[in-house]
Length: 463
Image (cartoon, rainbow, N blue to C red; front, side, top):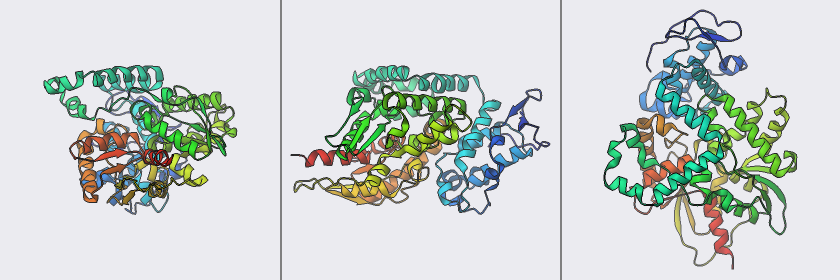
């Protein structure tokens, strides 16, 4: 894991810890110390999480397990451990897949500890380097906080891909000039689409008879790479009697920031999204639901209440927001989905379903996507072995930990191969990008969002 852990005296007043490796005794306030300490004490060290943790299963090292990481965080707060590089490295080796939370009999809130622990590592600067600092500043604090800039970069990337320049660079082997880590990541570059969500979805769309009024979240990566999924989601909502309000040029939900130790920016992005939805739809209380179709985003969006609990101006609005957020599959089953009409010429297709970690473990939405897939005429749903095992995408994990990510993708693709399916359904943009990279070497295998299959079935059943 890097440097060995050193034992220190009691935690300083106000929950501050000295930073190791120099720093002249500088004290850093701990985000972990702001938690109810019972959160850190929940872990019984029973070991039920161990066989569900991809990094522990791979290395068999206790420090690479959920209970090992919890022990590190608890020792830090209790003053038995120095806040050092090894602590930060271990927390970033974790996928954050939350499979441990599903397995835990004690209800340990690992997600909260994980995010606060990473925030402590970032505030202390124990992982700082010139290159890392620049990348984080440009990506997290510049690009993903400015929707217009993200879209501008997306359009440049789209031109590079669609013009044929990308293909020429690959044919000439020019990618060999890139640093090794970038060269290995280049095939994972997502395909940016010509039209983004604002061009495909009107600010307000309504069916002839509306039973519900919902807000639609289009995301950031989803907006650039899978805007068609957003259009399909709106079509499905309309077919199921929902009036849809979609704010323009939405901001990142903040999950990328929260999962990478930037909690202050995560709070800012939460405020922006609440304000944007209020500007488009009025008071949040007037909405039946706020819809998301991206698993990782949805898991974070449902926690705005906790994220903004200390903000007097937004505390109440964040609580309403969290109560309204629904994953699209969850919402459709909740209101009673309209079944597509079966057609005699419906094409039979074998589909398997990969459960995005933050949908099944983070949001506990597992049965609903399967229920909707079984409604689609012609679909033969085949269960995927290890369906809840992480594919290795995990936000930016395939960038920061490429070796482990590749191992997890190979394991996932082997399981998919056993099903004989020609379609893999998954409900998270990160998973879809990762699975598409794995499917590139498999003839006839495609990756599709479940809601897109349902949308197609509705269109096919229309006269």
